[in-house]
Length: 246
Image (cartoon, rainbow, N blue to C red):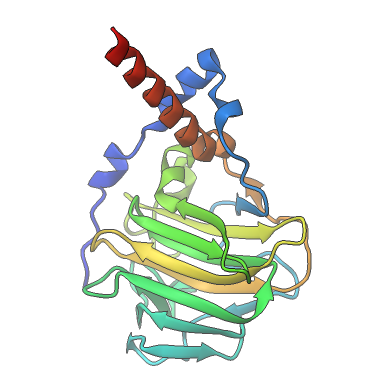
């Protein structure tokens, strides 16, 4: 079975320094707004959506192995790429069945194309690491949001560490993530990416198609996490220009 590395967790924490810069330089105002999509997280141990009436793909009925194309009858979407493997310490909600993984071998990307637009998408993110990435597109092919999910790791409490069912893999994080549209936005497709061979494991993909209040809890310091990158880039550009002028 695949091997998970946690070394990236120790390295992927650029935001603590940026938070200091924000407090002294007001960088938050320089960042673009992430309108149209809200990213929230459920309490530790939650492995399924809390949205009443949502439809869920559990992957338990999907043929094992690499996914060429799979049409999910439960969520009305078509998966291309990725693969489905049996539950183990790294994934499989409830400690049973099967789960989806991207980033093993040549399966570095997966697309979930919906037959009809959605207002909400949720997934159980298991054995999370800093290489896991999600991109959301609306029906006009505009990018609603792009998230390196591992960027939230420095802001998660130790309660999210380890498989909540088996108690194994104490060095990685397990959490249910929610992505909810706002202001009439819709999700047309989701692209899963993983820039290394570490694996992007997930299960219980859930969707809803009517406007709802975002479930779950705000990610601690999430506004700083995702907006400070832009502010830091501006600051770095200013510093370089000043250095050239000296």
